[in-house]
Length: 80
Picture 1 (cartoon, helix red, strand yellow):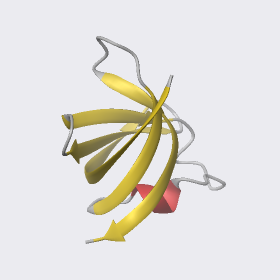
Picture 2 (cartoon, one colour):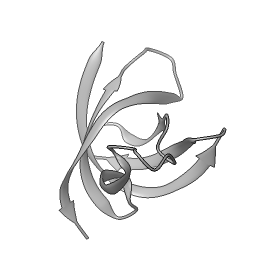
Picture 3 (cartoon, one colour):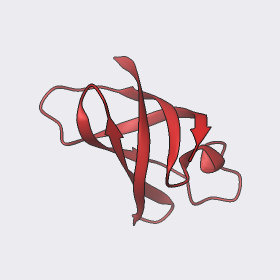
Picture 4 (cartoon, helix red, strand yellow):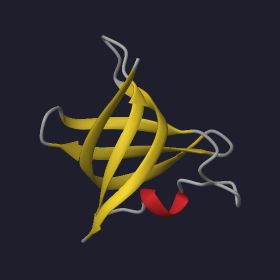
């Protein structure tokens, strides 16, 4: 199930070979973590939207009882 949420990116950590973990602070859910597959590749479409201290709208797969979610797409709302 795809959901949307807007939040402020706090930090990103390398995860596996080409992926990153994105730590986001949201108004509705508090702090949540997304996995962004392929984000470290040169051809990544989401790379500019996932910089720290950027307010971004995220589309992701929400699953109950998970600690982090798979990111589908991101679009920046405002840079801080």
